[in-house]
Image (cartoon, rainbow, N blue to C red; front, side):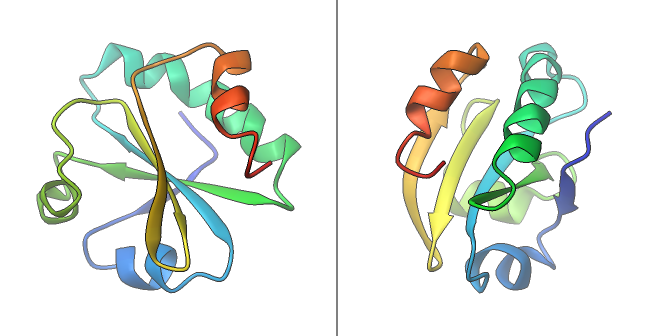
Length: 107
């Protein structure tokens, strides 16, 4: 479905919070149509900007602790992390140009 690395409640701290890279976490679920629509767009952005940003996915059904901690109430939700802190939140599926505009500071 996606090339993005899957992260979990167990790996979130090591994979995201302690990463030296800028990380975009795509909070998604299997049953979410808009999540499936945005996944290939995120894959494109990830491959085009892999030197600047890493994109990972967290399934909110399988990893409720992290989803709850970051108050994910609607999906798709994307959060950009730098140095363990959320620096940007994007809610909802958007076309590639809109996502790139939202991420312009990071890519």
